[in-house]
Length: 282
Image 1 (tube, rainbow, N blue to C red):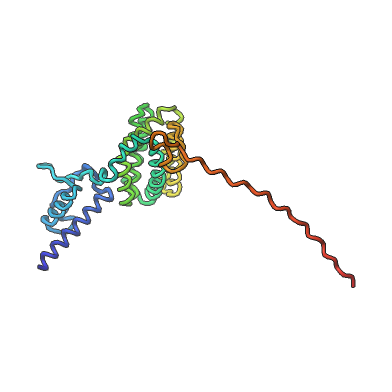
Image 2 (spheres, helix red, strand yellow):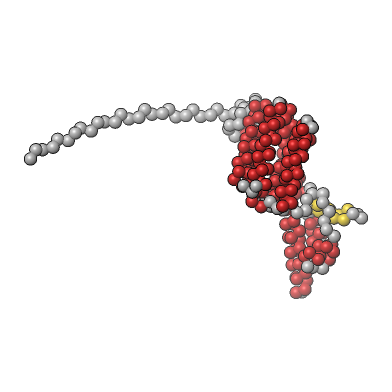
């Protein structure tokens, strides 16, 4: 009885460690898991313990076995969150601003923590994608440039080494990546100035992360997203004030809530001159 309970506990422990590897991005969607033998050595358990842990993960759709090939990570964590959003954004362009508003908060934080926590390998990937972004701009391939842009943002999220940031980024923004890429392509096709400014913003962002300056990295990311929000707003004609429900989410609705008029300033009260007090003579 005690042995059975101990075996169950070991399986649970191994499964939790494997879940952590899935959540923190150590094992990414589409990647093949190490063999049972390697995992058993890493975790210090028997192979049948690893096998049972993998079976539990497979039952939850997190990994899948392919005959003769091994066990692979599924995209369940990426697509299992808010999958209807892709169509909603296509149907309701006003949601784009909400996405960018969300990204400003989330990606400002991921940039901050990437500057603090990025490993040497993370920094190599960030530098490599920044170089790719510059090459695609030089080749005037707007689609490839926007794709490299999206990949760079994903790598920065991974470099934050925060499981929740990474989960939100890969699940929500992964679903919407097509729309993010479309926004980037559209901005770059508007004019050469927009493309040049986007490149400069990414260079400033990457330089701050590579130099491990977290506050500068957060500011650079937020400045970049503010720029995108402003340009997307100009292009769509949507104002960025008021709740989403008032920003053209259905035909005939007002595009924005009118900003409240400021309260009138009150004229300053006149100051009364104090009368000099009389002093009695001795």
